[in-house]
Image 1 (cartoon, helix red, strand yellow):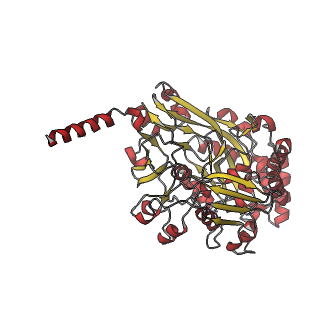
Image 2 (cartoon, rainbow, N blue to C red):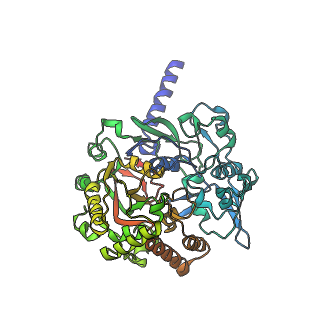
Image 3 (cartoon, rainbow, N blue to C red):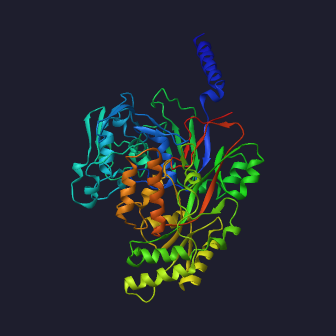
Length: 536
């Protein structure tokens, strides 16, 4: 009799579980362009890594797919009368989830000390985070980066386990937005030190506190996330998990082919695959979110010269290629892409799409001669031009080559590399000139403009202009029309100096299959949110 009752109980449980359907959540299958080598929030720069971090960590704030910034672990906050001291009161129900075998840290509370340590370690003189410059408004941040102050003087401290204080040197209304970014996620000092310099390099060296935790990390097949049952209850996680298939998952099959075969639920698709994807009856979401630019390495002296940069900018003749661009690209001579919104409309619609430097062989030659005189050179050794594979980039780069030859008599040989390899070369400063994509980390013109701030770890162009920095500093204290004007002036100055040379905007397309719901696609580096996703 007991055996029969036990069997009946087991059967009823199985029926209950089987009848849950989508309410139990599904494993969402998604293709990513690359595997990842590092998931350290304070140092990971790869877009796939930052997307994974945004799904496995929770910060004081979170940026929603539409760009809105909402409180998460910051239960409440207050700002001093002079706007320089921000005090954040943390929720007390957030805990860590240990992905590996470090059970001592499993379900340990997430505290203000974890946020203070995370922000502080970005300013470790042994290795500054590439994002440290984003927090230039924090007290002593710039001094620490220049070596004029110790790391311990950073204006961030935990007043107690659940109270964080951030002191600024100037007002900065963007602080909640910055604190929602992947690099502002918490980090337990005790856990970090226990990893012995392995933090973020393998599955056992991570603590997660977001909607999901890292379950499997295999760059040759799949990176798996699973629902974090310890996540804050008032933000339910619908999906049971996410399997992120890497390029080696199906012998190199293209993401669109896997999606069309029903092997994945969603993916980023190319423009050429769009018609076939639309025929499936699924949904396509698109954003004109990327700007492809020509970067000159200003860390190398000849290319830091403003006249030389302007000469190259004037040599670019967009009319040569604008009629040959595929449908997902369009010629551009401004930096901020249309996906950046401003008070209900695109920033571009309000600021205009005409840049300050247009094609002019005559002006290009004049600036080139002036630059050579400045440098005491008879000719410029430009070296090679790095170009990313795919999307017709090799052919388009040929028109940039053509402009340099016709206007300046300069020849730059093309070096075509896989996109991530080309970007890594640029990050390491191992380039003379490169055509690369830039995308915004958050919904503000500042997200792109701040990449060129003096001292920014992402200022690959090596640009430095005190007036430009001052405009960005002032923007953090402004609002409305004054804020818009500050950003517009900063963009104009950046382009006038030839610090970055826009070529074309790109539209990104994301497909989700029929019956797949709740995936939050974003034009920003939060990438894709899977928290509310499910499949019928």
